[in-house]
Image (cartoon, rainbow, N blue to C red; front, side):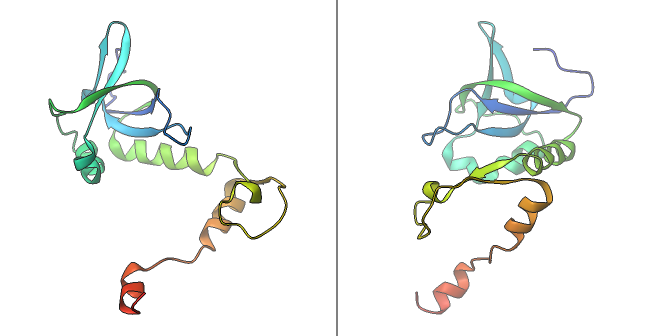
Length: 142
């Protein structure tokens, strides 16, 4: 695949869904992508390196030979890592999220009315979620 001249990173979607049936996207350097038999792939870190993916992507680290290749498609080309992060955040903030009590595993509420949240309404709801401090929980002996 030929990228635009100023492209350094791409927002990709993996062709294989997660075990929960969800699509996975990420921001990776173009050097991690390649074409084989007319199919676009991305070399992606092993689970042991998941905690380093953001840093490796930001500095455009070379992929390792041990990384597995995954079928992908490019959602958006970007000029640098920071632009890619902004575009991903914008995509998430403009996405309508559907939720219902029936989908909530531990919900004690009855009913299955779907609630559509987007934009400022979504931000407000997410802002109201209290933080969970693991260190505080450990200190309390729980």
